[in-house]
Length: 247
Image 1 (tube, rainbow, N blue to C red):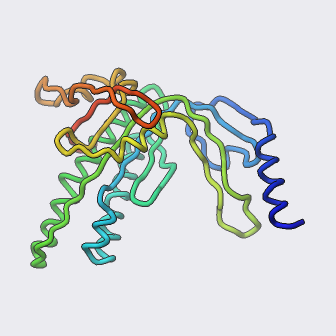
Image 2 (image 1 turned 30 degrees about the horizontal axis):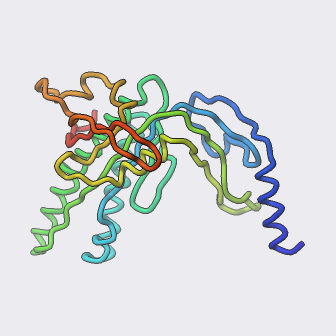
Image 3 (image 1 turned 180 degrees about the horizontal axis):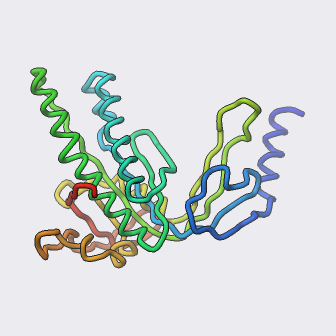
């Protein structure tokens, strides 16, 4: 059979296949979802953490340093997401996606966001500043980033090609629904004054007071909500420029 005919048959099979859908309570692993037509319906909170300005980073600094900068951010953010109960489900260039489930998934995701901002402000940037200044470097790099969080029902399926014997995986889970898409878009929004963390009202209204106020005062962490368009969605968004060391 010609390759183009194989592609037509493959697309037709996918299009006409009925999903074997089940409800889920935990974030599935890739092998938990059947490759052919398996799917899981899941209520989840999505966090995207995105290192800003990576293109300029690679233009202005040696490749060896740029790679270290990206590794510090992605490695640290991933460890923090896991520390607060999230699952790492996607790396895309210089950003990472964490998925949280359970009764405290919104609070856990926001706590992770505060800790990632702490990582940038209190760990990465001071270390890099000291290293550059000790080496006599005048062009001192400082990390900036964005974090987007949304919650909602997601449809989890598996995409890619089936493995051949002895091959590494060439397929993974995909998350379909508003929450993952919105969280990804919010992580790329930039507003230095309002801060790098943006959450939807569906996340904010379920937060504990500890995630709404500074720990040593009654001052609100989050700016007044603004209604904005995020792709096809019109949402009420809350922003914060707040960090808290991980616990």
